[in-house]
Length: 165
Image (cartoon, rainbow, N blue to C red):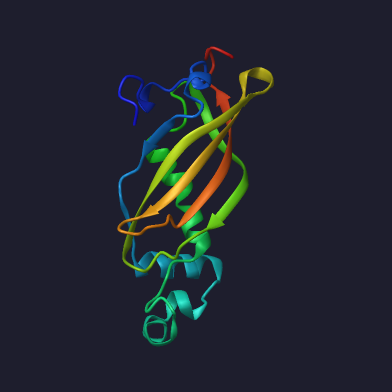
């Protein structure tokens, strides 16, 4: 994280100066079997490689259950919020889209992950709104490759009185 201009001071007017810079790194979060099972229950994706611990220990090339790819993708938004990527003078930051996602490595049940975010670009819109493009890398503790990389888009809506770009 950049010391002299921390994420806590990120503003809509200052976003342009931060393009290309890392916005932060989240704390580690454990992706345990309970989280994987809850995700399976919510989505209906109960593929054995995720939820059948004994079978996945026997038959999976990963020697145990792994998190759903979409579970790892779902971790991007809350971890980005933890980092504080929404400017302090924005009333809201809304998911606007995903331009690219690649699932590069499995996340074994019990592994810890963290998110690294780089501000890739901004696109000013009417009314002071901004589309913010970020590069997100979900790292797995002790792994060579990240679990995923994702280029996400957020629509930033200024709070009343926020300085427009």
